[in-house]
Length: 305
Image (cartoon, rainbow, N blue to C red; front, side, top):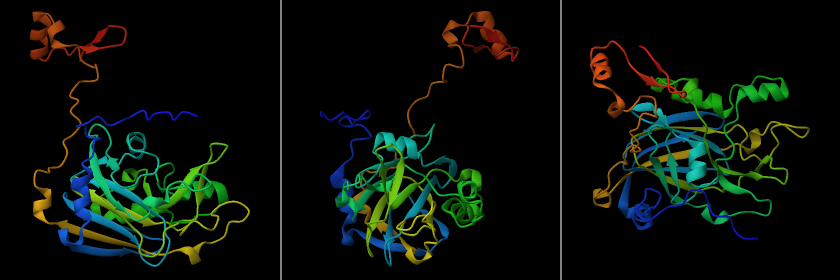
């Protein structure tokens, strides 16, 4: 069967055309120094900042563990990670040299993956892959629907608590990158999760393209080897491990010529306003006096302000 080409493909010089040599140099130990280090405890969430031009490493410290990652622009939380567009522009399971994209109207790379010790995992016999964008965070609302029980340490709730000190709320928590999580679609096109293949010391590294606020939940499902729902479900506490967080400052010479990516250059008005060139002089005078604003409707009518 012929391989169907991807809908979105990089052209030379486009923002999807990643300079791999540039990012690969950032992984050299002599190229950086660690400036921050924290540990996200089991079944909890934490948030922290990563300045633009720094590297973030997430590591499985004591064994396999899934983590749910959210990203925001540190100075404008309306700009946040857009999982579905990243899935389209990159792939459904991301790895080295894939980028994590922000929401409209900003639409720019927030971070670029520069290293991944699970990159060689590929696709397993069940069609599973690692670092998932197909699914999203577990949450207490779905859990209540499926089990009838309240549980306050799902990833959604962990992220809510994590970002509260930064002035954000539940409404700011969004679809995640499930780091270290192995998922896929079965023959019935249904989402499945498998046991995390990571081992102690595995890691994924991201280069911060802009100033970031990051939040991570250590999933209460641990390594997902135990069913969370269904007839065989039980408490997976025994499979839970912490995730390590490190932030590295790069040697300045490595960043020569680099600057944070600009917002998407679209500056149109979505067709909401009639082009000024179509206005008569009388309309122009009335608009400037504040008497009327003409808004183009689908049927060609205009409404007064």
